[in-house]
Amino acid sequence: MDDIVEDEATSQYKVTAGELRQFVERYERLDQEKKDIAEQQK
Image (cartoon, rainbow, N blue to C red; front, side):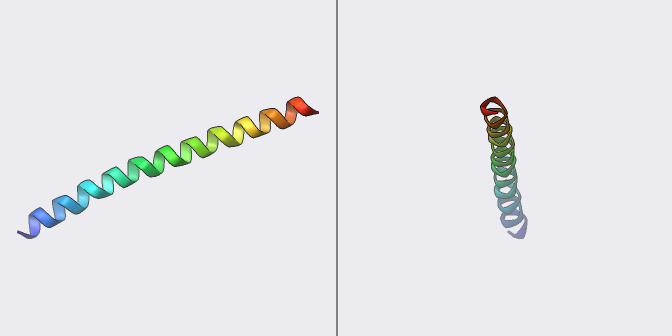
């Protein structure tokens, strides 16, 4: 039974890691867009 709980926790962690990766990638893209816009305004 402990194996089942551990497997569920592992699968939840993988989903969370994927979501975190997407969030960071989106943040980096938005940051780059912000820099590009600031450069265009100069």
